[in-house]
Image (cartoon, rainbow, N blue to C red; front, side, top):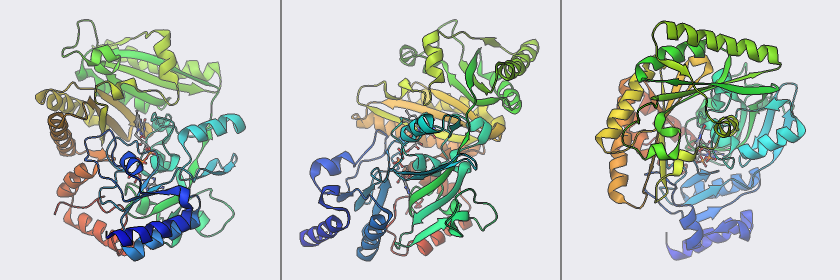
Length: 475
Ligand SMILES: Cc1cc2nc3c(=O)[nH]c(=O)nc-3n(C[C@H](O)[C@H](O)[C@H](O)COP(=O)(O)OP(=O)(O)OC[C@H]3O[C@@H](n4cnc5c(N)ncnc54)[C@H](O)[C@@H]3O)c2cc1C
């Protein structure tokens, strides 16, 4: 952009959001240029921090008139390059829009702005509505409730209730033209955001799009009763052959809030550094999180799990009770649970490719991850998490790596692409895929689906300004 024009846009942005909330300084655009993933960094021309919906509308309106790309960002922590402003232009940091507007304890929802973090909402509920909870992802508490909900994020009650995208009652969105759209009941009246039922549902136009169809400024997210007791039972599974059946059975018993199964490499940072599994260490560790209103209810849920394990042992499956030290138990029950293994390597690189797979394909997806990681000389670290009573299961292929070593970065990109392809071969789909992996997905997609994505994008965003690198097929 010519210097004069740059200065003129900067001046207009300052008028809209105030001079302290716009920057084009090298330090600040650098800060927003990358993330710990293997995706290439790219600096924006301007960083803009709006406070109100009207400011967002004005910034988007300006970008639309001047054909300037916009990338929204909340925590910037998907570890998949999804908030990198690859087309330059405006980076819209939404963290100042941080009001919790309403909590309705009867119809059980919270209405929040786009910068409200998971830590903020959790603390607010603990202080004001201690009997309520929302589904908290195990991401750092600075991530945004809305960003997590619009990327099909999974929280600590996802096995019971589904992904956070399933829990959206309604959205308020600034469309790429600057107009304001509401989805759900709130589109008809201003009285309540209790549901999206009974209307043509446009919410999906903004889920899984990574900002390419508009900036979400408000979202009503479902809350759930918070039982008094939350604890876990722990098991170790010696070999991967036995995992799928056990997982299917415990999942379908419908007693657990969440199930976390991770490869032996994820149980301590020392193990991550080993190339071989030590003798006496099981392949997989399984945490079954249970909650209940009373001790009787908890004990009966626990007995159901124990009975399943007992029956599986009698069938010859190698599953045994595991007793982690108390410190690890406390750790596992924290919400969010800190995931130390994400940043083990010098150089600070961290990426995890999550994939959603049919639950019965979980063993094959696990083995494929190991095969591909080993082929390229990486240690494997995988976490498995079924959701919505087992209708689907997520498998996270996590890698920490030296971000400053370009050979390692390239090799890991190959690994991620191969895993992504092999999971799609099994019938699965990558979760929050990086822009690079989105192209792989589109290559396999039905051409009518790809054409439809383009039609929707063009209809909503005639000037192609919104996160233009998202869901954009290979040239
Ligand atoms: C250690 C670790 C553990 C994790 N564990 C989990 C987990 O258990 N469950 C889980 O679900 N995730 C997990 N994650 C992944 C990730 O942090 C989350 O999915 C989180 O929701 C990302 O939120 P964010 O605020 O960082 O989003 P961002 O990266 O800022 O945004 C995500 C995408 O949405 C777009 N976007 C953001 N806000 C808006 C908006 N208002 N309107 C339109 N588009 C927008 C961005 O452009 C980007 O494409 C983990 C991440 C880490 C680092």
